[in-house]
Length: 140
Image (cartoon, rainbow, N blue to C red):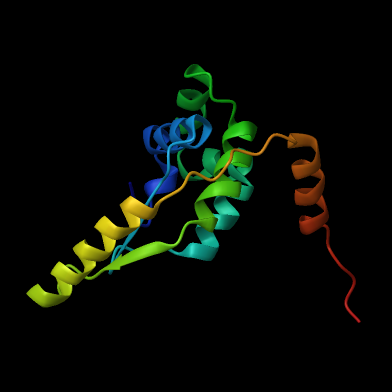
């Protein structure tokens, strides 16, 4: 389970756990915690550019990944293909008791329905697509 908060994808142990799950074919279920600052677009961009964004957001994280046989570009490739494609279950912990129970019921259903997203294999094509996406386009 991924508890989506503002800095969760800056933490090397969280990245390692997500990477291990994704590469082992273990489904990941995401819980979007209200008020915790998770920005879906920023997270996708962070994962796409993990090799350059992680040293800025958490300088020691890069070494932790590498020391645990998780090359940063491979982690970026796998998690970028996986995490943004997971439907998140919303949770407002300040909501009513009924709303919280409903969210927990939704989470349980999501866990039963969860399927692994296959880890991608073509890193060269992914890097090419990433470069094309980042390439500055002329303004009309």
